[in-house]
Image (tube, rainbow, N blue to C red; front, side, top):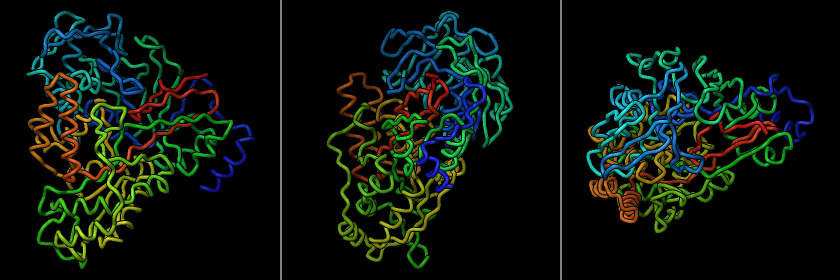
Length: 522
């Protein structure tokens, strides 16, 4: 496969490729398949990539993660706790029904009712105290207190047609029930782990659909995805293999796009459970205590990782080493947080101080189809740990299998990524670092079981502080304390890449999303 790809790229695709028979059809290949077609069930990037073709939210994030109007053409802040959202009068669902305040209220009330989600959307409506219909096209939302992140949170809640979705179970969405949105494309069919077929909805309130038909394919293997583009089986892909970047960029038959994303790639490590499942003594025996609970051990593991080397060799320039939770373009970035330097000797000394002069053994887990070169990163870090006395075995899985197991706490140490979906660091702090609390929704993705009440204190104050300067200071203090105490081990922000056949223009996005609407015929 690899030799075939390189040969095709080297030839510059001089032979005529069998592109789509109908120029106005788009065959788009994504790297991960959705776990559910219910747009409100599982907050997973693969699910959002598919859902946003068919569903809209009240407000949107633009390609640079800035808030823009969506189904709400405008909004008015009545008071510190009350907002009026004014719906677009001409917006209609795919079944022809107008979008009303009742549909919005139904959609805001539904996420907390869905059970067994690995990571639900209830967190993003938790601050809402009441929802009322002022009239058919005006929704009044009241929060319990000042809540500056309301707009950002609402960008993650897709609006469903109340009549079509009422009483429909999550598993039925994959068969088409309830799949009635307002997006540029409407649902036709779904074949799990293979594809979603979409048809245009010309009455869409936004720009008219570009494509007469859209097929969203799911091809986890990077080489196979690029091979599909080169052979003409697909028209556009996300995630160009890093080993083929130079050839793709130089190929006159292809167009290429790249953008630094807001996705932080990091290692989670179980610091909250004394009995952790995948850490043991080097001889395989059970340890008296979980060494990851010791901040010195967590710091030693961080010092043992050569981030610049990984960025250069493994990521091929698509990784930007960091100690921050968000890149400098997003709110909450802290310029005083410096990337942990590579210091294996210092790591060994800390392990001795912590009582582990001979190290220990553990499993490093990770996805193998979600992040840029994710499996290779895990392998590289396992080798680096061996140099400081940590015996690390590697276990990587497709994201569809990895995410549910991580959410259940089956791992002690692993690679994962998280994008600041609200456009600021509070998103990461709430989801991956805050103490796990079903009542508040904190720690939804906190697979480290980390809990620091001081960090939560800074965060909780930031979430009710309207002044941007004060909120920024609080978020920076929370992030600094979390990183210093090893809540997670930040690695890098990754760049996202796309490629398409000649004649297609690509709009790259900071949030890494890949939608049919971001590909246009030139």
